[in-house]
Image (tube, rainbow, N blue to C red; front, side):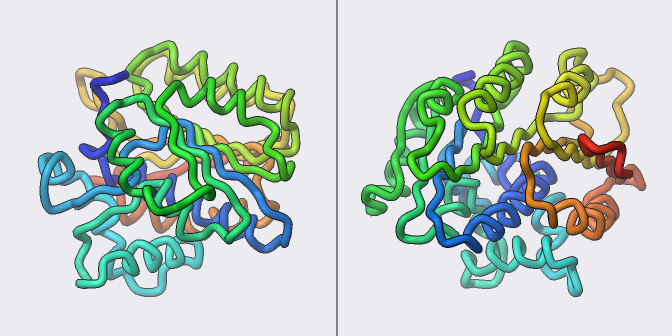
Length: 283
């Protein structure tokens, strides 16, 4: 939807979960010498200032990345992510938040590639400016990211990570992401896919996890709840990540990280998490 701007939500609880896991996935992928491609279907503006503009309006980051900023002894998965974000804020305070494209760009090697898709005209312009000096390593395309994903699979190196995180303002997104994963697995069955989704009272959102679980693949599904449902049933109470072909180490890492996230990001004692795998319910 062209009305959606991720800047309003930069650095919130959903970003913390999504980006901490994204960093973990990328760290795993760079361990092998063969290059890989990252495809980000809804890249947004790429990076966000937290002290002005849209991000400052609701300051959702204050209940997200800010809660972990000075937390000592974080589990390794979270410590790595927080340290990476801190390194992008040399003044020592959270004034800048890197979106998934910016985080990915900092972890790629010379021969790895980053393909970014964004439909919003203002955000894609900002995205292009962010990566104007990146050369051939990063491509920025204005257009439908799910169509872009289809055209990008399989990547030339036959190694790749696809991040899919639409706004879900359009209820058709729920069916579209499911179809995108089905099609992706046909084209590139060995790829790693990470789908972000909101936890909402909306019927389509409630049905999505079960539909994802029906995919014929090895998967890991994680949901982080940070708030209790409101009396009117409106608002996002948490978010989830559905991962296909995740690293074998990720489940164990999440077992130590998710309780900390639930405790630190949960509001009024509402923090909790769920984790399921294709091999059976994990927690």
